[in-house]
View 1 (spheres, helix red, strand yellow):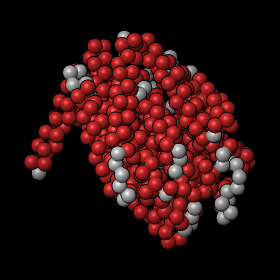
View 2 (cartoon, helix red, strand yellow):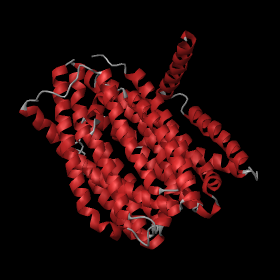
View 3 (cartoon, one colour):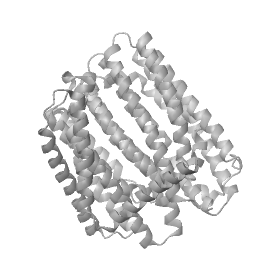
View 4 (spheres, helix red, strand yellow):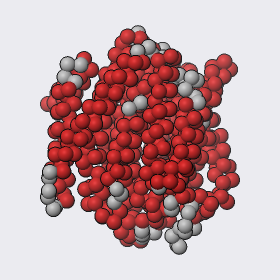
Length: 515
């Protein structure tokens, strides 16, 4: 089966971006309403439970990634029978996983108070809230989640994003009404649970309509099942490390500094995670296409694709880093007020963390598309343990800054070099020294763009915060992007980027003219 990789990636990125825009706008509105209606402590409580449930999701063991990867070749070969058998295996695994998560969740319930420093809101029963979060997670596995695999494998993430955007929009509106009219945190959570159920049911029906030929039936040969579970075994340590790494910060802050500090930290972190989620949309939209390319194209073409995607990623990363440095503080002041501002040094650390998190993502998506999890299985585990240890040490010495410094250090000094080695050794020969040097040039360019842009923004003195943000935003839109394009003007990757952008614009104009 022929897949239009570029077209599907564009559609997936567009609809994913639209979904994230809906989430961003309403997340900011809801967090603002939270603060002004039922209090900042509720935000910290929500962040804590969301991080805790991420840890419980370790029970998924990477089954989803292994099975979706296993569908790539049957799709190329038009092997419908094998795809159906894979779906059947996926469904049975998810039913078992739901039971495991339920059991683990109930087992750790008695220990929840030990992870929260200071008191929780007086009208909240933390066990009841926890059970509601747990219930939403378990139901997501027991519904039609296994049918999501088809949309991912066929690179039709745009369908999932359309469904999620629509349901999320209705959910956010209902939650806002609940907060403003009733100021009831429990009702707010019930709406979240119903939303998760609705997304799974609608996705199931959409999958049956889009791919009616694929039904969860049949059994894979034992050898193929063994191969899949070998990949799941490799993904287990990856999953443990990844979840532990990204959940550690919130849990450490809650345990050592309290829910109120966590809530202020999460206000800033919400913006950072929003930016990261946009990059995730881009990479998720590209992954199936990259997997298809790795199957049908030679190493030279795939290496060229790697460099092109890396260049596009750094272009947008440059813009985001500069915008964070220049706009973080005025936006936070406008959104939550001066009393909830952190020091500017924290802004610099958040921007640095963004670079450390996103810079290796191109290699990571190639690693996942190529299924080379065995050689990479211990990397996330090692960096998560290192991150947690350094976190605990530094948070007691320099407070909240230590949390970000620990994360940046482990990603930059342990995670990224290890990932580069694994991809080069197991998938593509990427000329490691050259790859590191060119990546360093990208980072140096970003620092220069951010410094120049921040210096110019510092000359802007306007009392009106909204006008100040708009002018700074326009400067951030023009200056770093222009500097980046001029600096890399002669690179073949920049020419590919420009050509792709022009073809997208031309395609959109053509589509509009046909209407």
